[in-house]
Image (cartoon, rainbow, N blue to C red; front, side, top):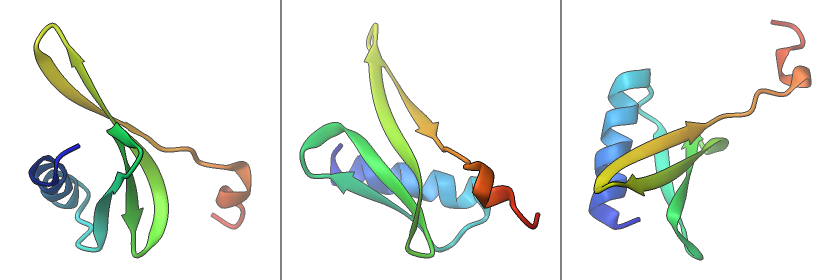
Length: 71
């Protein structure tokens, strides 16, 4: 993904989740994927999909059972 595209998605996600420390970082070897971090911790993968001339972004977040302990 291009820098301007990453910045736009990052701004959207920060506003949507109310997370000022959220960062979208490019994957150097993949141009259709980025990683999402909050406060420096990896939280999700972001995939770009282009189909029939329309672009969408898929956010994939795994929540492990051990992450839920004590919640």
